[in-house]
Length: 366
Image (cartoon, rainbow, N blue to C red):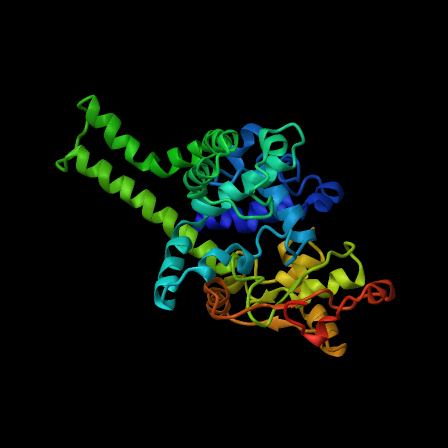
């Protein structure tokens, strides 16, 4: 469970951002050649380097491009508050809404992140089925979950959109081919007792059927715990009533862009190997969004400097416990809290001419 989470957050995440590319160029002997963006986990190397529910290429599009460069905008596929608007609107008691979040916490990679990253990948390919036949009734920025594959065809048929109703099963089959290897990996522990039992070579007193069932259950529970671990250290990084979301886009690496990295991100505790590894080195979110292609250790060295600069200039810098940030994220997910909505943190003169509102006014719904 922990290894699967760390393979994603510490290795896959930073390598796919190009965090070790400079090291590869300056010290080619320091790391194996596959630890480089564009090589790591691509093609057959997915089964060697990083096999998870998400296709690495799909995650690269969804996370490295869409999330990082449209942070907390409507184009950001990881905007938690927007993604759970359906839950907000449901006439259910709050306790039921919070209980439903437990399901997502234990399954989110398979039920949300994998299909949604695959959607973003297919939409980025001009000749793909998704790019050419995406239903007009479905906004491309809406999240795609496992359950949408069953719900959306029914809604299309109810509206008389027969062609669109067939689109979703076709997309589902494409996505299913992506996750079948991971399904096999989760079930893999049960393979040995099943094979040995089938050929009558099972040497133990415990029936092989019982052993296979327990092994399968162990594989599923381990994957669920990996989901929970990754959810806590990932899903709450950019959600909470003290963080900002935007109605406008900005130029990458502009002053506005750097400010958004601080005003829409939250760090966790930092500074020691134990803490950093427990958080998968995702506890430096502000620094990581400002400089996404650094190694994990560079973030630890940079963090005190960024924090001091923010304090000197009165820039928001949030650093809190991960479990507390998860609670703040959950409140936004169920609709009990809202993020601060604005057009920009520091709009330039041209933006002021267009009537954009700076974030310090904290205008909700502007």
